Image (cartoon, rainbow, N blue to C red):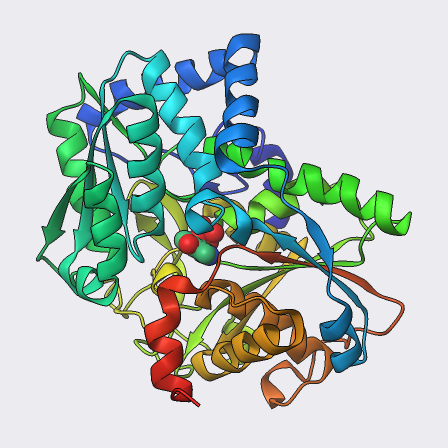
Length: 416
Ligand SMILES: *Cc1c(COP(=O)(O)O)cnc(C)c1O
């Protein structure tokens, strides 16, 4: 199989065997239209100037690459730098992609956007960009998530978006995506679907990656300026995989840079208790390749191929599929993936807060926890992985800030 992988990647929208475009016929035309608009935007200097200007003046780029002095000395391992995507407007990396697709909607003459959201971060980013660009915005959100993330629901409404509760299925992200796709099919003439991660049918996984690749471009320049060498390791959490691929992409051709994606290990390895799609080597069961929501990738599923329920303490990582490019990077061995538990993420969040003065989003705390496990492993699950040494140089992507997770942190740690 692997000898065919390289040639297969040449097909647009394919990452080895993964990716592609598995949608009902009614969506093929709008997907072609979007692909054409995106291809045109790539070489349209006016689009690129507007995109760069909004990233800088509206979102707050470039974000700092901060040396984590106290975390480094506390862990006693490699030098650790933190890419501060948490400092962006609206509090997470998601605004990069929302700005790119919002501008595309304007270029395509579509006055209305629909979006799905899990934790609410992508809904907030979409509502923010829609307000800024004068677009109508409808956000689909599972009612379970609406209850967990009521602050973000209020933010979206304040920004003028309509938030539609989704009662079907597990009432979480996957169900919200289904509803957003249904809306798009119905209203495709005036509506753009602003998908929030490197998921879905082509061109989304490629386009969303490109909009986030500014993270890695900046980080590369910043680490070279600070350390005069490339990092040895990159760490990022992986829900759909957009913040991770945004950091990784600029380093894929550097064989000395190892890439580690950290998934949600939840409460443990049994199917239903986690959202780890590429961590079978640690005993997280249930993932096999399949098609979900337009793309072929690793999916958590039952033996009969029903989509499995998932669990993570962090809503942004609680999704049964992973972006197809990550599936391919895992198969190729170019990036490695492992999972940390809810508890590991909580402890990492507290440690980062107290050593660096940064309260991370629970999602981002998974990346920090994954790094900690590779410096001082306390679980047998990662015992097979080589440990990082003081000669290593690490960049951790801090995808978002922890304000939205304060209820969870308070429940976990009390108020002391
Ligand atoms: C949504 C979100 C994630 C997960 O999405 P990816 O596409 O995997 O990046 C991670 N961190 C934060 C802060 C988020 O809001």
